[in-house]
Length: 171
Image (cartoon, rainbow, N blue to C red; front, side, top):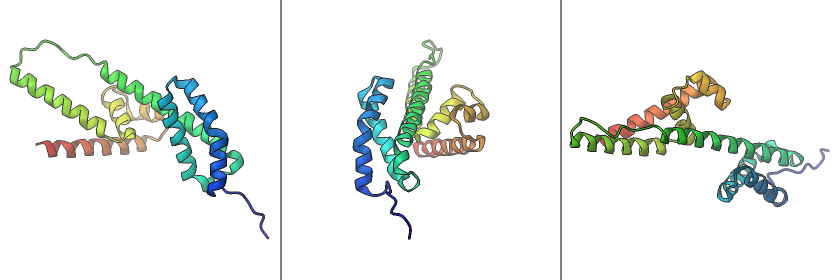
């Protein structure tokens, strides 16, 4: 006869865990970010990931799991913000000998490119910007993000493929 083991996949157990730790997690994230909206989003995402992996996590390990997930999400958010800020700080030349038509086309192209890049899934966008804007190698990106070089290559391939598809649609 096997003992009755509680499972996080049971809604009453998960609800109890959520009620017990959600406020504490939110406060922790708010302390780290100073942003209520971001804290709420990360708290919700961390508990969503806990629910998605409920079968693999014991109820007594749920607090550590959800805090670790939230901390990793926060680190990824900070990395993403750093890439975005660096991308935004790239100076654009104000003077040019180009025709007004060319400058207008260039401005429209930049807007389309920014829109296309922002449409990429976050993981692909981060890899793409780190590679193309920060000029990091795949190995540097892999080390920075804590993933394999092959994962970086795959994300970059998918990002370039999606940008290529968007480019073909525009033409």
